[in-house]
Image: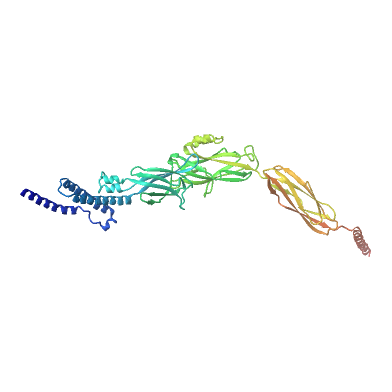
Length: 500
């Protein structure tokens, strides 16, 4: 009996000692400043979690030995679960706060079809792993279950300054981005830019939109050339300009020689740089500027030649040749290159095209634009029609506006065709009416023709006719008789005076 009483007293004493221990295992009251200092809050939560775990293990051992009731054990277990949740929440808060996606590089390149592409490499640079190492053991089961080295659901897109997406696909999703394992996504540029905005959304809705300057793919080791007006129709005797956009994709060479091949010898040509005066043959890139704008200006001869035939397209190439390959090009500078040979040379180039066109020029050469005539008498002009252009003239017609009641005649009225530098003589016959008054009269002539089915006009010509009065025979005879009489009288009186 005494042994049983002693056992009950010892049990009561032990239970009494357990009550403060259980209370001490409770989680501490939340600190209002934990939101401002999540790292300190994590330390507090971890400490509470470890105490609650230790207490639960101790209570479990007592419960298994039937020294405490199940209610006391469940209370200790619930306290542990609360501390575990609080610890996990503190971890999540700091994990999401510290998540960060960096852009390691953004490289622009051009494929064989001329399309521009951009490769963007993203890295998980979350600092949680390094910072948490001082607080949380890396082998901690809870810590590993939250995957602090992984950022989930990363969305990437490219946009211009106006916010419009300029890439295809419009957006790329990465299911996860692990620390120490960068991922590369590739886009095709819908708008050729050197600076783009990389839009990144990740994790629990965090976002970044840095604007980056695109690097050039140095592995290509060449200058890519583009020309918007790569095909032009050019009139003989005139000039044309081809704009050239040069973009360096090289990490070794920065100076290139510009060469044009397959252009006929009779076509003059030279390169110049946009915004600069003078001609150039080489172009140099700098680290801060790997895009340049140049022009190729060509001038065609005035007339068709053996190597410049009218209306026949001429294909030629502009190449940007690095220094180590200039000799190879110079050896064949006057030869005809095929596109396959240029590709085999592995240099940047662009294919251009010109179509020589000619246009007729109708010129009227009239040595005399003024004539005199009398009423009812024919007044005639003659002039030459010359084609001073670079294409045949067809259906040359003349139209003359004459004064009222005048008659006109053109011989010939129509010239069927007139080749380059060929000329023809035209007669213009005008007949005034018989009762016309004395004075000046004008007739205006217009000349039209066709050249390659396009209308061609010559400068209008104005012919002036002076109509004079008819001379009277009786009046002329009377005036002559009076003059003779006057002269005879003067002679007579002169002789008579000399005798005195």
